[in-house]
Length: 469
Image (cartoon, rainbow, N blue to C red; front, side, top):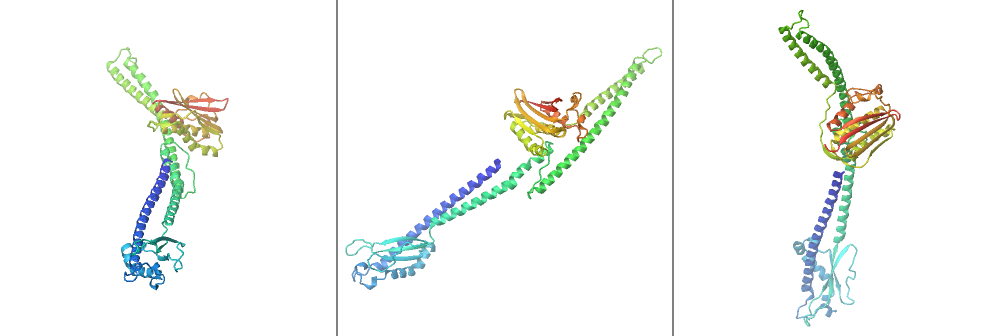
């Protein structure tokens, strides 16, 4: 979840930075273009004024508005068009085509003079410049008319809005793609990524649920096949181990009695018991002593063999790390809630508070899994309750299940390897689950205790893990 949150934050920050940079660049370019436009407009006004508004001093040296009847000054728009046409190429070469206005209009300041009266038009950005030449006679400056520069489709604010809308749409699309990828790829894969590790540690036995997701359907099918293959091979290994243990135990016990008899005879010879005069024969006693020593060696080997074959090797190396008690509840809910619901078995997973545990989480999960599997297999479906509690001297995990309880005579053997109780006649298994669970608990300096309540028809397993390991 944290990785997905970082992905969303990265996408938001990336687009925020992109929108900020785009607006800064756009504003910079727009400002630069506006400065170029202003320079060009100023040059047009100055150039037109010099060329068409000032008349030779030999004539009247006055402005056109002072000689209204002079035909030379009656059509300023035509003169303005001529000026623009003559200088268009030079303006484009110096300032660029983007700076050149789409249209240049002249508006007279004299009443009754014909001209363009509409300045503001649709889809245009107008710039109005006043013509203020100096009167040669009086030295005064007054407005003689206006020049309107039209820039069509030059509304930078609209273009900027369009750019921001486009970036916002791209952001929404990108965010939607991220959500889609996270929901269909990343989130399912995050759930699947832990399964192979748990399977290798024998923490779970439940298969991955089938899905219609085309991306992971075949993967889930393959992993479930791998799980079946591992479990079948493990079953065969357990059966071979059990047969081997039975054979070795039989041989060991078969050897034990003859060796004891040999040692007894050797001791009798060494004491001269079989001599007619009852005296000890030194040579016979010496040989008898060697026989007795060899018999002791065989007895020691047999004892060691019996000790080793009385159990099985548990593949577990503690990895002590801190974790929270809630993580065990989440493990139980993830692995067993759906399965128990399908089997219609009432259940509850509870804890007294979310304490920090310093132990091997994987090992404890294996213990809980073994006992939960037994509770499901040997229970009668009336209910399974798990309580995870923090006490002063450590942690107690109590698992209770309704079902066929064992007799008091059978309870001492319940944690023996390959031992199965009277309630396991029609239930598959090899009798090593509880043995492994107890060995793992002992590796964590803890233990497992079992109680049978025949009145309540309930089995109870108490797992103890010390507080500080």
